[in-house]
Length: 199
Image 1 (spheres, rainbow, N blue to C red):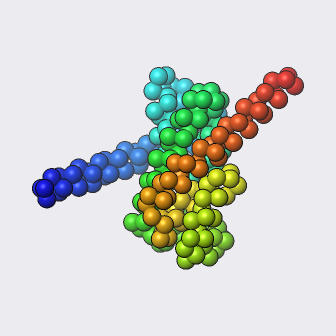
Image 2 (tube, rainbow, N blue to C red; image 1 turned 60 degrees about the vertical axis):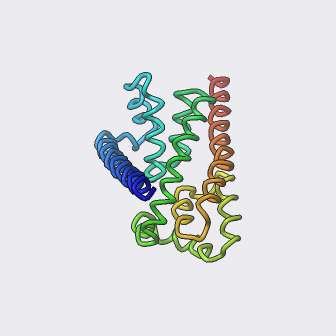
């Protein structure tokens, strides 16, 4: 039994390392190609992949959560425009949820020193008071994930250094994140329809 557990642990660690290396390679290429600098660049990049575009888009959504370079609303909007409201929502949800879970474990492993390197001190100071608030943080975090007004990526990192359980964190992300993504998607579709009527 111990040997099987050791093999499983080695396999998980190896998968993590390989996944991290692949993400770093993709991220390096994305910076060079300026994929994250505008919605047009991102859309142009995805068009090259044909039937593999959904998979590439999901990877992009994972990366943009782990390394927040562009607002989630922009990449979410690209998903809706390219893949339509339904599949755009599915791909957005898949990538953002996976990215949010990865972020939690990264923060739990490396703690506040990493967060201080990644985010501005003003942003940290604004939310640092929630760290030791126990159940209050959980309620605040759930509300922040539900309503598309808070810096979600940052709060996912912050959640990793609190006492929130893994199960509770994942449940909040799985159950409440769809509402934010849906609101972004619905808003973009509504704006698109208004523009079409005008022109």
